Image (cartoon, rainbow over all chains, first blue to last red; front, top):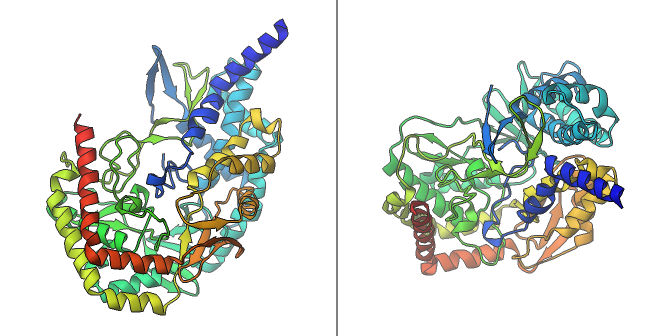
Length: 51
Length: 468
């Protein structure tokens, strides 16, 4: 049980530091299509070079 | 060296990304070369190496409890470990099967005497090339010749668009530079109004700040009109991308540089502590915005030039409607193939970036992750169309597997939607041509005044919200 807790703490910390938590929640939400920005194919171009 | 400081929770963070990108450039020059090519490392290939290496490097840094300066750790990771992780073959496959044949094709065609490279999104059938003062690309659509023909009929619009020469299925246009001198704002906004009317008349979309620039003291210029005759049922001026009222993430051509609350979402940005250690990745960060698309030095909101904008629109709508019959004839007499949007491009980038995470690639395969992502994110739905979703997802997985971006098109007089492999993936309820004919009749029956009203409302909305 202790080992599991320690493991999940490490995973949580890795997910935060690598940005995975932000990516798979907040960023994924912003991928939802908004009919009024149909034109917005970009939020970032495919190569990401527009940032 | 560019150093960006972020202060969060009283901890000073340094942006490490620029140095990491330099390392990726060196890596690409060493590992991905086409013999004797004058090809310069494209931001696309460097970008792929960066995306697919940095997430693993940060993950491993903590997994191995490293105490090294991250840039040193990253350099070592890139040359020693990167080739042995699951994502590395994806880049190699993409280079060998997608980029390399394209590099060889363009080298043979142009016999370049100096460096050249790719610009814009990479697609199976077409990539854009910058060489000397020209942009080159394979002709897949037909909008270039159509626009040329329209400009011959109504020359008043001719400075607002590129003149494209099409020769042996290769399109060539002049590369324009952003003009950063003083601007005659009255003339500029009047011309912007003309541009708005033209875009609305031909139901254009995607003319946001990335496809737009100011090229002289009075001229707004859009250089990518791939999406014409849009089939959206609720199409209105806001769909053009030229204008939007939102304050955050306003990437419209007219306001994208003004509110300054534009964020980058899909580039992993690495920050470290003052010693360059303890890296963390953030996705939503303020965009660096390489282009400022409002007149230089202007402190005024475009709404203060609403009279100029609406006069330009009114004049342009009248010109277009006066030439309605000639334009009907023109559109009826030639084949027009235009790009069709099934999903915003950002969805594709999100889908393959997910796989760049060790948390994901250690558990699943690339195709599986792509398929799961694409099945979980909706297809654009406010168009009356029946899609073959299975076929779409299959085609998109095949395309993204090579880190290329899916591309759909339609002949405006047909109801079919094609993938760039030529497969039919959808069926429109009405042809884009029929939708356009109704649209023009509506604009002619007073509808254009409603669109001018939309512009006034959008700009006023942004002006009021920005001021508060």
